[in-house]
Image (cartoon, rainbow, N blue to C red):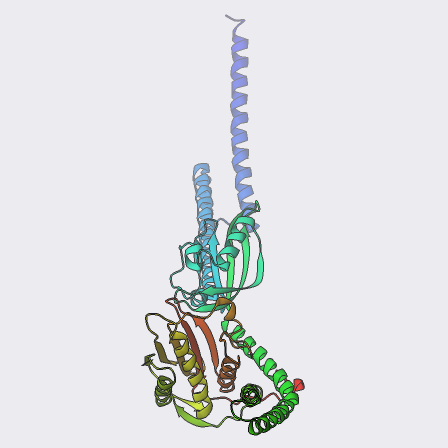
Length: 451
């Protein structure tokens, strides 16, 4: 028993020393922790709330955790503010893109890989003459066999890019338009075609202006050519006609010589008529400046054509106003168109008919009068539509080929335009547009002054 006592005493001494060491370590840890947080507060690492200066470790740890939570909440608010700002910037950018697309002058079509139009701006709807293009198949809108549909299909299928293509497009109202087209594919990161971007520009007015410029250049060249040969032709024809009259007067009636003289006279008169018509076409026109009331003029033309081509009824419909120009020349142009229409409609077994329709045009910057002369004849051969106004080109057996050329010159000199087309129901239609107020047209006198 006496031997065991020293061992027990040693154990208690060891446990007491260990407990003191643990207490000393705890006190040292609390002191070091408080000193550390005090140093952090002094250096600016403030958690927002005043630190308790209590010697209670539990209270100190609770306060520290609350400060950390408060700091996290403040950071969360900052993140929300940044997120809201980014979202507003994205919405503003989207609104700006929509405004640019909506107001851009060129038409824009977005077509997905399935061929559906996913987006279209107002300019595209105007150029195509179709409303509500979104989520319609492009082949349905552009026409199944049209050149424009072929270009879009080629871009979607093969990823091809088409730049500055010019295509003809027929609107749902059967209006022919000339469009400038640029089409490029939309590709993803794997270079797969996911859609196509199509830019459209209506070049119809520009194409018409180019045709007028080309026609004026031809007029200038023909004017120079005719000035050199017209007098020679007339002098030669006058000489031939004079000798033919002498032969006819000296020969006995009924003889071959008398008949030959008569034949020569008829041929010289015909050639003189051709030369005269050619000079009318090639020579610059001297236009009178007067107000021309169109409806009474057309009614007089209708009566005159009724005597020349009987049995063909005329119908006048629509609205006609007054234009500034030369009454005699405008009457000549409309008379030629009406006579051609009446003669063409006589070939209809069911009976001919000519419709002259008037319309006041206020769509463009220049207001004017549109006059349509339509017949129910056989129409114009497709290969002749582009040549119908060329000098000396005719589809008639006895035509000179200068009638429509002179009509076009008169209309253009009045600041207007003329086009020919075939109607869907059959027959041809000539459409004349004349401005209400004629602008001065500069006469081209030589090759150096050409447009």
